[in-house]
Length: 238
Image (cartoon, helix red, strand yellow):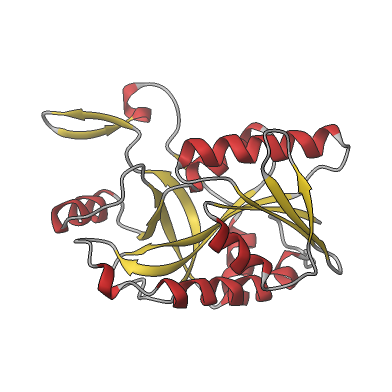
């Protein structure tokens, strides 16, 4: 299986690449570097596409289109990186696999509160990866399973944290790219996953409490465990 892994920044890409290798490099249209490694049964191509859902969608779509034109399509896209965890369900250093990839701020503010675009009569705000694949990957990586929110503005207050938790009861983490990656994957008909490791608690920003190094190390560990979970077992559907 060929797997495209999309991160936001180079540090996340390098943490994923540290799980395997050796990696070669190809340049995509537009100049993005794609790190490529072939392994037994699973080949990983890792792309740092940029921060935010728009950059993530554009980079993912470029890589998927290039692969399709080369007649070497991907079988899976994974949005990966570090993110904020909703305490106490997703503590620092833990791993989260999304069973729902949700755009938390795609919609409209109203006097009665936030309305997602689906309630406005158009668009979508959620992608749901295949349950069997989510279960297999989470078991391999020792991860919790729950909703991962995509936000364009990182949460920085207790009030916003409480609002998001109330609107999304199963939420474990937030990041900035998953929904963009999922939109591009859906447009190409390719399954998607999101894997996040927790570097900080969602809420008031306290940089002194962040554990970015620990989260990057956990990301490497998660991807070391990933390839066997991607090999279909009898009776499993993605």
